[in-house]
Structures are given as structure tokens and as C-alpha cells.
Length: 265
Image 1 (cartoon, rainbow, N blue to C red):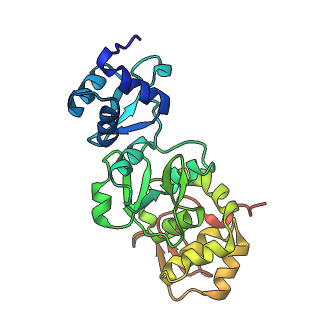
Image 2: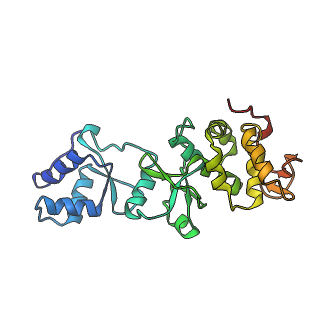
Image 3: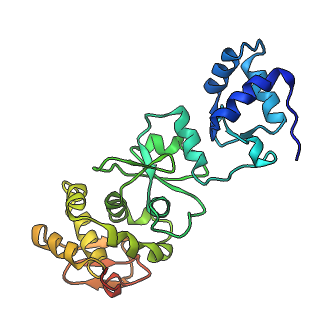
């Protein structure tokens, strides 16, 4: 598909093609307008570039996806993390990161991204502000975020801690069955210990229960250093799917028995 290039916008487009940004903010565009000496207001430039198919809408106002000439038309690159990247382009200090299957996917541990990317937000207010196309839950990691695909992401030990801190926030434990063994195989003792330190005894009990089949080494260390303290529910109170005497877990949620997972090689 041929896209028009107005002579007055050629300088702006030339800069965009040279830099190849995935996202363009209103501030970025205003700077380019100034650098090229264009007298047209930034909002008018943005409107013309949108109408011509060079800037594509995102879920965030004032943030667009750039469709370069190599895209052969006004077509999105359809990167699943674009909504979060667009949000953070306006809120770079926001404390949030990919979690659950989304994190497993960008870490290379899940074969596919979830239909709605999951994000761990530091507080409820931030969770409410995230784009509707994302699934947000509240969780504050002890370990630093890492950058994956250009967005903050929980480290794998933090993902595990989030899962056992908020089991009901996991959108599909059935899907987690596919990537959880790969995630468990990558867990390291020291980062996991740091991530779980200071969290409630119920969180450590759920972690031990979940890991005992896949990573008995980590589960045994947890049991030795922090033995269970009374019954812990894995899921909402209700009819049991199974009960674990060692970890004193009443499991009403998991569609699988974690004790039956083979140990990681």
C-alpha cells in the first residue's frame, strides 16, 4: 500500500525513518518538528501522519506506533508488549512489570504470550491506571525488575513468589502447567530466598507445596528453614481438590497435583 508523504513532513519522516522508533510520543514529535524547523503545530503534524498511516494508535493517548516504509503500509508490528511500552513512555517511573505467563514468555520459558498480558503493579492505584488491554494485579517484588523486550519484567523468582502470594490472580493455572516446569528449572536458591524473605509463612508454604515435585531441593530448604505454621489455603475456602500433610496445604484451586511433576533435570 502506497502512503503519501507531504513535502512539508518529509524532514520529520526522514528523522523517524533514520531512528526507527517503535513508539513516538507527542513530546518526541514536538522535538522533531522543532529540529526540522517546521512551523506547523505538532498536533496538526500528528494528525496528518496518522491520516497517512505513518503513525498508528496505541492504547495510550499521545503515544503512537511508527509504521516505517519497510512495513509496506500502515500495518502494526503487533508486538504484544506495545500497550505497556506505550504506557511507560508517559510514566517511565511507574513501578510495574510483566508477570505470570507474560513474564515466562519474554524470558523464553513459555511458547506463546497470553491473550492479555499480565502486569504486576506496585499498588492498586497504578493497577487501575494501566491500559484495559492488560491484566493487572498488585505485587511488589523484592528483586529488581529486568528489561525484556523493552519493558520491565519480574525475575523468575519474583514470578514464582507472585504466583504463591496471589494464587487467585493467575488467570489460568491450566496454562501455567505448560510453562511452570521450565520456570522452576531456572530458579536459583539465593534469589528465591531473598524474594521470599519477610513474606508471610503462608506464601513460603505455598511455594514449597508447588515446588516439591519439580524442585525438591528448593522445597526441602524451605521446609528446613521455614517449616509450615498451621493450615494454609491454596485458593479460596471451599471443597478440597487435595490436602498436603507435609506442607499443611488445603488446595482448592490447582487443576493438577504439583507433587506429580517430575523433578527438573
